[in-house]
Amino acid sequence: MELKDVILIGVAMSMDALGLSISLGINPYLVKNNKIRFIISFAFFQFLFIFLGGIAGRFFDTYVVSIPNMIGGLIISLIGFIMIISTFKNDNKDDSILINKSMYIILGMSVSVDALVVGFTAFHEVNSVALSVNSILVGLITLFLCTTGFFLCRYARRVDFICKYADLLGGIILLILGLEMIFF
Picture (cartoon, rainbow, N blue to C red):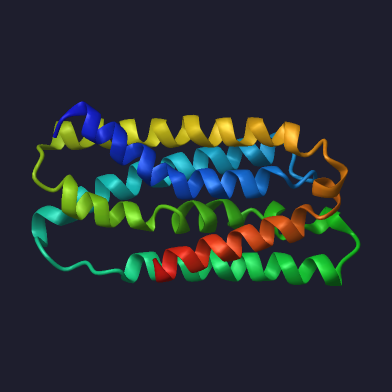
């Protein structure tokens, strides 16, 4: 597989994580530490799932259907729905669901489930060294794009409307992203 193909796959795989980074980044209650943990989680799970998918793809040549997108979409939609409900139920934003430590793992895995499919289909024929390098490259692309997404959200939060309704907007974005993953 050529380098340009790996870069294009990395960018495509990172789009879910980028969208999630933007929807998380508009929340004014996430501090720098939370954002760094999300970025690392997204990049790590993209790397890990591409790698594991490539290894497993050697053993299973044809097995995967659209179920991984459905699982990731359901998880992201559920979290978006919970965020929307918590906007109306809770005036104290300090206990936001996003600050829960398990969210780093849950969201990191849910946006990376489709990377298993890509590993199965696109990376199963390469050798172990090339698979490792390609997986690392996809992880680094995800790291870069998510960092950029969080950085750009610093400017979006300056708009008072966005700050006031960050959880609602983030929840709606997550719900739409999850539904898009399930149905399209």
